[in-house]
Image 1: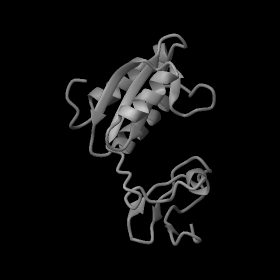
Image 2: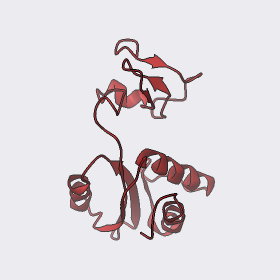
Image 3: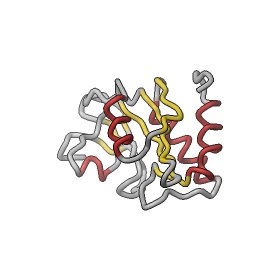
Image 4: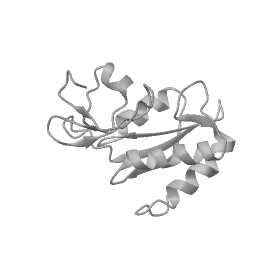
Length: 147
């Protein structure tokens, strides 16, 4: 972060793939993961024009998996990439003010329900177990109308 001019606000190390609170050189409060910064994704979504304003849930019926995710702007390209990988059913695709916070709420709730990600990827879950949990969070999120 020092090299990029950022200031780490997080009081302790949380791990390479856990978001840490940071203040970018422009003064934006942001929450990058150290891994992503190390891979060159930058630290500040505002400076990168990545406002994470779209949340989606897709499923792969053949693998019985659910994937949730976020993107910025038009989700078409991202959803097409997932469709190519077998995630053909778009269960929810919503414009929300802070999609990253909705994603975090889903992941926290899945963890509290004892559901762990599949194949070491944090957004992929068993479809049968995760489906009702994720939809409960999403459909009750402030500002989200019926999916």
